[in-house]
Length: 274
Ligand SMILES: [Cu+2]
Figure 1 (spheres, rainbow, N blue to C red):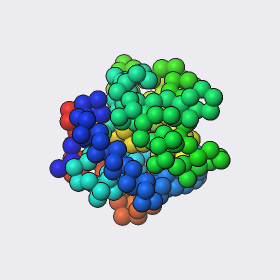
Figure 2: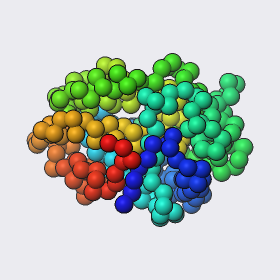
Figure 3: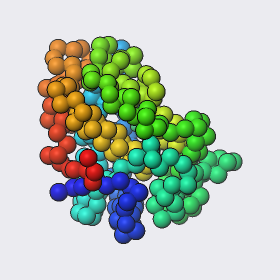
Figure 4: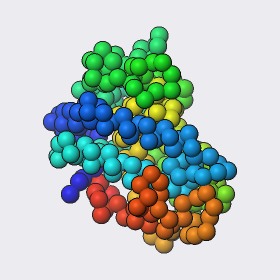
């Protein structure tokens, strides 16, 4: 059974194996197919048209399935690997062990944002940015430069307290848990973390930075916490909503899984705590 652990509690060996599996997926070309898929959905999801991966109720189940696919790919390289999560309410500075050279490497240099240490630095030669929105082929970050603060535990609590999963118009204007967690409205949790990291993480090709997976694994964990907090609260909408994935409708690009199939994460993995 896959157990997703807090990145801060990984052993040196677990970090080494996770990094090695990432590098092998990159080398084989499989990694970049995930970047391409994510960018296609970012570009295609619109507030007034079809929306599946983002700015819609299926933001959470879509990313849950996307992470599951990625985790299975990692496990095809090394069966012992699970996706770690980054609790950015606790590990909230560029000095966190997350950003050390034995794990993800640190922030970018000021001149061009280029990450210069760690396994994903361009200088190491193993992490070319191939699926990109501009000419720059090196991983970039600017930790804390565009927005000063990561979300606080109190801000997370205020969003977990919201009892309704999502509301019409089921997009970036919605009230309710999903849109506050996604961050288009209110204190801004998920979106703000992308902006805080900067570089490719602040673009549609955000999975180019391996921290994408750790960020989304924590967003996914917050969904699980919300479900436990509100046992009677359902995924919404239930049915008949144009352009939006209802509870029992299948999601692109897989076309074989609905939000209903993904509500219970324990069918696939558990967390180290909660
Ligand atoms: Cu994200």
